[in-house]
Length: 198
Image 1 (tube, rainbow, N blue to C red):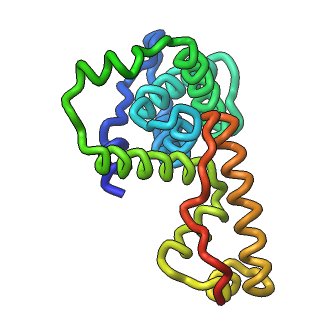
Image 2 (cartoon, one colour; image 1 turned 90 degrees about the vertical axis):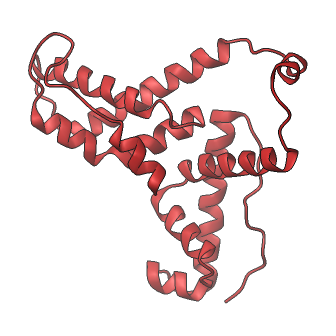
């Protein structure tokens, strides 16, 4: 949670867009409302949210330029579309970059504990995986992490029984994994493989 708040504190838009027009306050307010969703979109495509503030700022600027010519009916949807488009553009650009081979990196980098590196990789992978989940899947996942059983989850989210909740969760997890594989060409297994419990 602290990470999100720090990232949002870094999000700042000046008074004027790149053509010198004053920003409409509604644009800036909408950008703040969509911050968490924007961060998830960037995370989904780029596997890192470091560029979120820059991408949101560019989207607000683009929306400002458009809004002076046309009326934007749904500002939040427009901003999210801009953010997704820019994230995809950056993903494609990054895929064209040729990276230094591992041997060269190992000679340049100081030794790092393999265990620490593994934990960081798992944490990053889990964050990318969560960004690929839909809202219901994310709620169910959080409840499972908190140790809640399927009966509790079914009751809380309005499913008819524990089995139905579990089946729906597995379907949503599969969808999130497919999204992750499409965007990152990676294969991961869900961080939970326990049996069905009540």
